[in-house]
Length: 320
Image 1 (cartoon, rainbow, N blue to C red):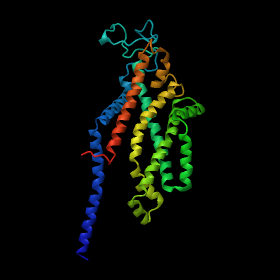
Image 2: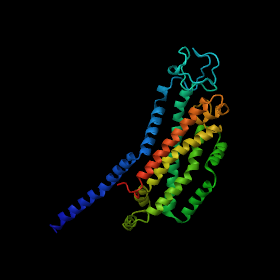
Image 3: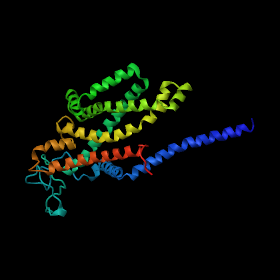
Image 4: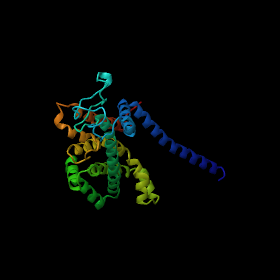
């Protein structure tokens, strides 16, 4: 017995060391593969720049985003929808500089664009976070318990999926009333079914693994198995879909604001800025070009990062 005890102890230590190593290696490998992906790196750069712009908007913006320039010192003549004035590009020094011109209410377009990044990112991150928490919880419970619980939850998700997401969001906001908070809630609600179905599929595959059977045989409760063993191993597709979903949420928020159901005036929001200038596409193109470009770049950044994360977290790819 005295000779066997050190051997058993050594084997336990070796198994613990070997059990911890793959986790650290998997995380490091994922980060390494992510930074090898040029599209993912470009997406991260875009997103970091957007976050930086949103955090420093009050410091960078030259004017108040909701203040009209009518009656302000140095501003005279025809102010609404004035074209950009950049001194380095030949604009007279005597005129106040407006990098992206003035909108139809004579407000600085550049300042409104900077502050609009805050609204779009808050809506994107908040709605997706809420949808993931609710949707993944419902999907995991449905997949793990099965039976009538699975049928009730997933049939309700199927009903929600039967409606186009944007039309359902419009209907929800119409019932609740226009406003940014209601738009955020509507976007989150219509996104829940896709995360629920994704989480359910992951749980159905994970709970059949041998280690889950072993844990169940050791007497672990279903709640412990779900929380400690099944859920952590089902998060990868949710993380990827959530990253892609943020771009979609930003786009849907802009669409609702464009229809007058999202952010209300004078809140600076990219979709609302497009809505205000939709009849000036040819006479004042700068009013629709810059907000549209901001929406496109934001959605592109999250899509690139999401695609890169999907490739980095996919163990089936040969990266040698």
